[in-house]
Length: 86
Picture 1 (cartoon, rainbow, N blue to C red):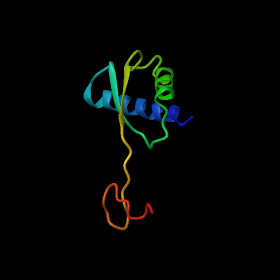
Picture 2 (tube, rainbow, N blue to C red; picture 1 turned 180 degrees about the vertical axis):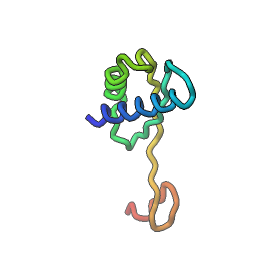
Picture 3 (cartoon, rainbow, N blue to C red; picture 1 turned 30 degrees about the horizontal axis):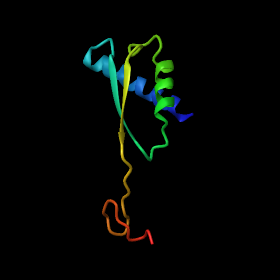
C-alpha cells in the first residue's frame, strides 16, 4: 500500500512548512491525484488519518481533487496524440 508512504511524505512537507511559516495546526489538505497515479482515494483518506494521528494535522480534512489522465506523444510532442494508437 503505497498510499501510506505518500501520506508520510505529505506529513513531512506539512511539518517542514509549519517550521518555515510558523503555524502549528493544519485544518485542511488539498491534494490533486491523477487518474493514472494508481492511488486509491479511500485508501489515501484512511492512511492520512492514521499517519496524522497526534500530529499538527490530526483531525485535518483531506480533500482529493481528481484530475483526468493524459498522454504525451514522444514522436510529435503533443498531448493526446493518437499517431501510435493504431
